[in-house]
Amino acid sequence: MADFSIGSWSFHSLHRLGKMNLFGYMESMKFRYRLDHVDIWNGMMLSTENDYIQSVKDTLVEDELTVANLAVDGADVWHDDSAVRERNREKAFLYFDIARRWGVRNVRIDMGVTTVDMTDEQYEFCVNRYREYARVAYDNGFRVGPQTHQPASCSPKNLVRMSNDISAPGFGIILNVNRWLSDKETGDEITAPLTCHVQFDRAFVDFTGPELIQKIQLLRQAGYRGCWSMEFRGGINEYQEVERDLQTIRQAVKLAARQA
Image (cartoon, rainbow, N blue to C red; front, side):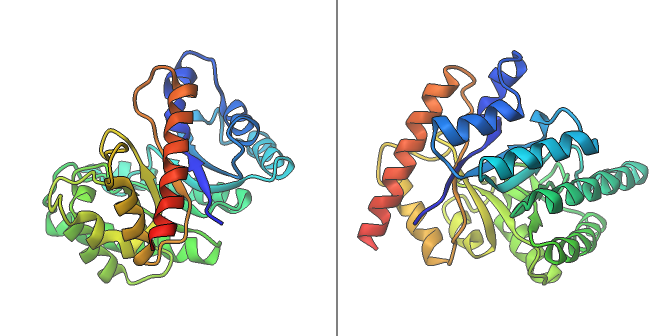
């Protein structure tokens, strides 16, 4: 049976207006959308203090929710300032502990490189740091890696090369389907074997034609067994638009299975 999730960033407008917090998001996932998995963006978290983290943990347990992905902003691996890189490492480890406590399946820590092409220094640093992170992730039951939404991580060749050099089972990528700056036609196919969590977004994928089904089949053939997650970027009518996209993805997953 397929699992589905909705990225909490899909409700960023409601959150910004003070109309949704993390607990409201989790309640909506369970009781409005009837989902068993959540996809949490840390921008919706009010604190990283123990009492707050435990309260979220208690809600996850009470509502029988699994965190498919924890998307962490503000802990990018690379920064031109070495002091910032070390502060970001400390933040990453803070979220790794949260991931352990919440039983998270995947953690997104971005690469932080703002150009498609990477210098040797940037590349070697990112490989070494992700290798360190991947060991911690594997030991604690989750995977970690970048999301394909920053310039360097929007190059499939960068990601494949990096994955080969890291060579650790705790490393994976969070795939925003079709969101490439190079190798646009083949990027999803190239990186499908590396994907530990996937997000579909109608801003990048045609939900009205065969493309969505084709992408689901491509990922399944590559061995993907994670959640089929979605993200809505529109910022208006978020409850209704998310419902629409979720139903579209549910139907596409069913059709893809029948056509397999």
